[in-house]
Length: 252
Ligand code: SAH
Image (cartoon, rainbow, N blue to C red; front, side, top):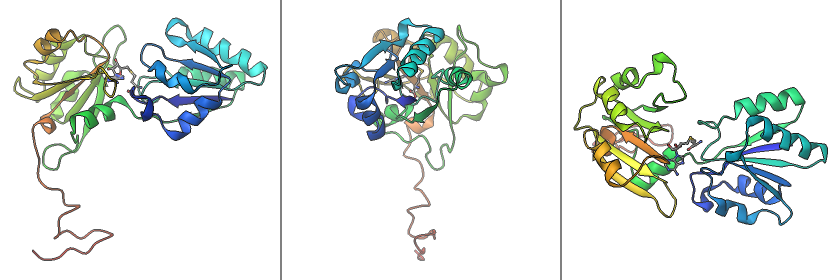
């Protein structure tokens, strides 16, 4: 059996209870060494076989799983944040399906959640934006043409860019073709929830200079949108005059 587990954004206590239990019981752990905090491996069994997938191909990962299965051993495949976002998990599942190896998935706290937490920000502010776009710039790996940043930026909503901290001039150019300006609030969040986390608030116009000043080129998210500046309107949900399924509104 293979358990795909979301490791969370970095801080070792931001893995789920279920994920931590699976990790502590595993015969083999294959972790994404480029981004998963190795401190998470401290609770593995002393005889646990630990492999770093940063140095492995998909074929090697599948082979490690297959040979563990042959011995009746369980594998935890530990992915950073939540496995469903840029985790390259589907291709692993397809191969496990072909081999008849069962698997399940334990979600994790994605880095975009940890970034908002560190900034004490809310992506969906009433009257400001009710939509969050999670995306990336096209780099060595392409993005489908209709999802180009410039097209998505037409909405002017809250946006988070993964895997794009090394392409900030291009990112700015794309966003300026949409609804954003150089004054649009932005933030660069480096290693959210890690001990060496950096939170840099800036604007779209100053984003690149800010990254250069702090030598940030990777392991960072770019957040863009007016949610970073506004208090927004008060929510209806907690408005005394608003009736909900749990509470009758009163005239004010
Ligand atoms: N599945 C992961 C994303 C993997 S893609 C998740 O849910 O977070 C790798 C990219 O995620 C990095 O290039 C960076 O943009 C972002 N990332 C992952 N962990 C991060 C962290 N702790 N702080 C900031 N960005 C992070």
